[in-house]
Image 1 (tube, rainbow, N blue to C red):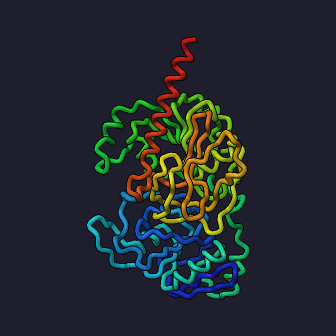
Image 2 (image 1 turned 135 degrees about the vertical axis):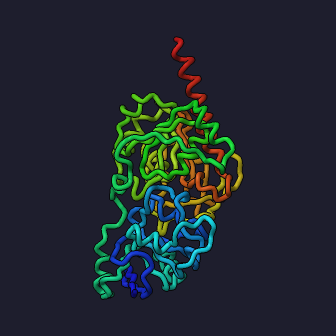
Length: 381
């Protein structure tokens, strides 16, 4: 079936449908990962976006029920050079195209993804439309231009959980200590779901944490009433300035409980610190971004998926930059010099290094333990 991809700048690509038939609109970004398409599709942070895979052959190992980061795909659309319709892997339960069709994800294949990637890199991410039903290029370009984009939108409300729930699954066979952690949880963590990935929750459980996940709109008073040892701020989609209620809650929690943020959680923490965020030209999406820990001078290979960044010039002197992206020098980590709060922009749970950044979960645990000791000491006076 014929399909068209139209960009807001007037560029049109003709290809073949790969996935569900229909029409979809979103901001087009490119991801440089060689594998992990299933994790990408099910990452809630991609809500509002159409993802282009730069690796030319996608779908060769199929899809299974274990490697998902959430219950369903969240991407608005999917673009590949060549989609594999006959996967070969002992873990495969179905083909990628069947999976896309089952979940209503509109995709396109057979276009020059190199040309598209260069255009996005040089001109920046832009709105686009994939359609198998409207094949009029002018009509599709007009629809792309009319798309609202990401700036200022609250996409978190569309991906967060409807009510609190407990998470108890660890890393299983991938971590010898995870089951021990479940039976011997010593620290209570409340995790804000801005679009949380399951492997983050598994990492917290593997770090001996008892985890409760709460909706993004949960007020700080409700969090404090749960008496957690720490608060986790998750990843999520869109513009951090589009979720002011989350920033206000975090600002209230600062100094009251240890806080650890990842991705959107990092940006929201930056806003709570008093800083500002800005939109990147084409974002960071992939599994091979070098980041330097400024404390140890070590380099970590990281997985990333974000379109906004914290502006270091707007942060107060009480906040220290701890990590930098070596490609463009954007902020990848920060911590408060006096309060127990830190964050990173990248995804340590994605294990691209594979375990370069797992120490961050240990750092959160130690911060909670030290804070608990401090509270116990103060309670005696």
